[in-house]
Amino acid sequence: MTTLLRIDSSSRLEGSFSRRFGDELANHLNADRTIIRDLVKNPVPHIDVAAIAAFFSDPTEHGEAEKVATTLSDELLKEIMAADDIIITVPMYNFGIPSALKAWIDQVVRIGKTFDFDGQTFSGLLQNKRAFLIIAYGADGYTQGDFKMADFVKPYLSFVLNFIGITDITIIPIEGTNAGKEAEAETHAQAVIASINPHGQ
Image (cartoon, rainbow, N blue to C red; front, top):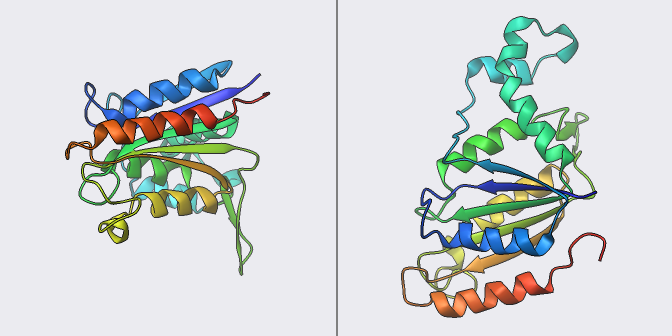
């Protein structure tokens, strides 16, 4: 039985390229169970000082206040830990990721939960998972072109996923959505999706 976790972060609920191809990929993967975490319909709050303090303290010593402060983070961690495949649909906003997605990342990148540190080296704790990043770019040239050095979405998300142990990452770029290149980008995205093997096949 396979579980898919889908993270949507586009502020556009209609007409979103990243969401549309998230639908196509989710249908293609055909998981037995899908968890949808829409960060726009149901925003994840930014971490506060109480959560940070709880993250870096001994869980065995947590009282009621610490448990309350980590309730949402613990729920999000259960979702990502249960997933075999993870889809993150993300538009580039001003060369970076939407703040809604950053808030989710800050809740799930937790020492002792998704990564460890032995005093010298870091190690990711999430193993045997696949991640798919569907990234929508308004302009053209982020994959290969003049704007390649300005793409802070793909390297950042790839690094974060690697940091927590997810190394099997497929990038599905959709470029030029505001520059008349969307047809070409859509064809490429569809080809990448078609080449992906669902679990068990």
